[in-house]
Image 1 (cartoon, rainbow, N blue to C red):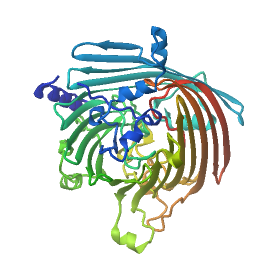
Image 2: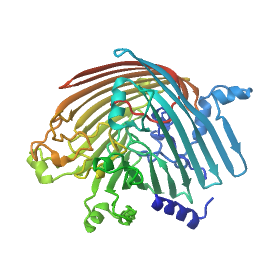
Image 3: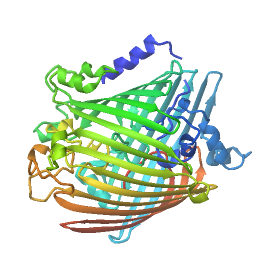
Image 4: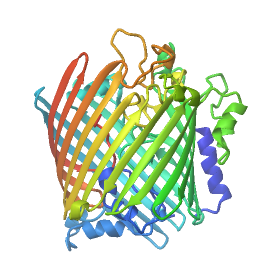
Length: 535
């Protein structure tokens, strides 16, 4: 953290500071208001590195949300409930807005006859100071009782998916909290510098095989450079391994917190034509050296342009490198195709021999999304397929795996899986209907067998069953089918406050047994952030 503090201090001292450059929120429900414009045929935005900085867009986000709000109310209370932020402070060279965020939801799991609930109270604050600085902050305090499959996941990993450590609440529930925030500085049209605590997503689909917002927040420094048809992003982060010290017989408190590791990312996005975007990704993760006096951050990886693999080789590093490719191509009928390729490690000779070599670790994604589908305005359809080989994202030193806070940094299923998604979204006035069907299967570890079969990125792949003959879905073959349906009424577009009724059907099956979930929930919530419970 001292490194990040120094960098942001240096940025503010060296550059003449003075903002209106906050991020478009990552929530899929929230961003669906703008996606048709962002991915439109005539647009030329760089769309795959998210969150997108609002000043990179050529339209006014607030104006679109205001056009979706109820008619202008003369009553102050009605305006605040249905069409405005609760707090608004505007001056000659500053603007600050703030609103509460809530989630009061009750649910019922019918097979287990279990009552569930979520009680969230929090706030968001966003502001602009002058023409070059923007800031954002959010906080949410939560208590929840989850359906059984989520409850088991929280007790196993100790964290609520994407939302931090879950402390036991009234024996059957969990108490958890999450805060985020950043300061964004844009000295000119070409550069954006952002320092904060939050999440990122790389891709144009529902999932990402490169970097997703699946995990808990983390501190980061983001430097974005845009010119001509190019956008180049540097991302420096600090992650935490919750179990490293305890697994090695040490105490977190004696070690001043959880074990730290760091990541450096280079991401080059090129709008090759009006229809085709090609983006190149590389990242390196290295663990903190726990020797006395070590700061942990390797300044070799600060280089914003040099390829990371030669640097890694030159310093004799055993660190974890990933490279990838993201593609997007605009198609007729207001649609686009997209895809990703992730390469963790591979040997071309072994791939040609088709012998199932364990170190051929890679994955791919292929998807298609259409707006105004079949002539129906505001009907969006999407299909996506994800496939990742065993042991991808893993490392022989588990603290250098591609994960943070006990969750994978890419796909929530880790590796050794395939997944097919079918997604539908329809909006009519203030009503929104969402439907999602997911078919997935993966090879889990076998109970009583010490071998790692390549699904859990926290497993040490040194304990693999063999060097050759490694196959997809090896281990305990597991299938998960999920059907989810939601119908909602948007009360206030500014905070995406909605009254929501949802139904989830989940079928889980492996060689040890089956678990069925039939779950219904109803409530009112501010739907601004992604919570991935669909695995």
